[in-house]
Length: 74
Image 1 (cartoon, rainbow, N blue to C red):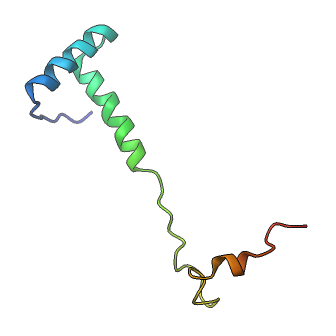
Image 2: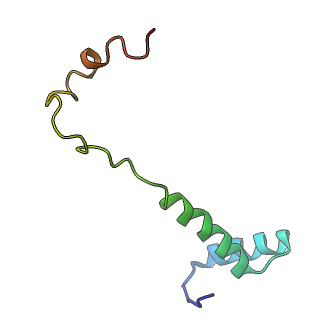
């Protein structure tokens, strides 16, 4: 585990202490859990297929309904 330091607003420290006491945890543990949730959200993959297909219609974004007409129908 890597050690780091941070500055907290007094009200954040107060609320953090209260949460830690209510949950029977240390303030550091509460902070680690909150950061783990936040970083997991940020690590979600982004949509990267834009521009991944070569060729095809150049007006797809403007005429998507026309190109998808009948798609998924039997």
